Length: 369
Ligand code: NPQ
Ligand code: MG
Picture 1 (cartoon, rainbow, N blue to C red):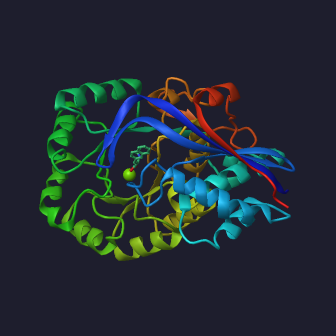
Picture 2 (tube, rainbow, N blue to C red):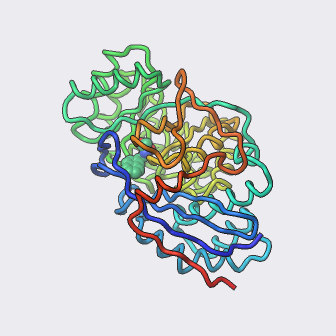
């Protein structure tokens, strides 16, 4: 297989519900899609970088730039292109995991489609359905939060995750736990605290949380280990886990008892699988995180979340949670579960006229030799 032509397409989709976190307020999703045309057919990738740096160093314009100028030429130089060879070629450039993951995802889609193999089978899935959890943004009032969460509980989600930050933590968590004594509940701080907040965060122990996700900075592994010794609530790391190597270090230091895996954050689905393998070897449960993806990104995440070590509900949701009209056929949830696509590649394809309607910019990259 050989890469022949690439389309970098920016789309803008309104969110069905605004999403506020310690990183900011999102009213819409500005997303980079990558269509890779190869000698064996097309494949699609989705970039999870946000318009501005915040969750991590990466941002959309920067991702598009490094893809176009550096990653695509390196991948196009390969005569026998495979997902693993694409990842190895891109490893010559340090950093930029979300940009690399976008290219790898599209190459893997094209390569698997041509081989009539699904993402799920290729990654080693053992499940046909995935348990779904929902991530709930910071609300304007406790009353509005209770109303929003009540809706999600009624829809059948198997876990509720509350975004927290200083000034919005103990009260919302207490309110939801009092209203829903039996739900699986967890909190995600997106690195909004420091170790000086340890005694305050220990008050979360009263609410029987499944985990506290990324309370401290992404580089603060030793502080997470110290915090873990002061809390009964298990610590889960998200932003800190940038590679299988980082997962090994975090587990060895006692910085986390649970790992959130996002392919975008770690450079692709192949590295995501290696993190899964490291965690399974250390008996550390993992779950599949989300970045408000379209159906394309969620299709790949469903395949990943079907691996054996993914024993906790994923941040994977029906399309309607994010978008009135997704770019794929709508992903549907039944009894808090979503089916893993079984068709070749991602098993879902974009509806081109819908994509066209959301498109704000297209750059075509050709001239690969
Ligand atoms: C997390 N995701 O687990 C991320 C953070 C996050 C579902 O909670 C736009 C795009 C806004 C992606 C805000 C969930 C976002 C985003 C937060 C991801 O930490
Ligand atoms: Mg998180």
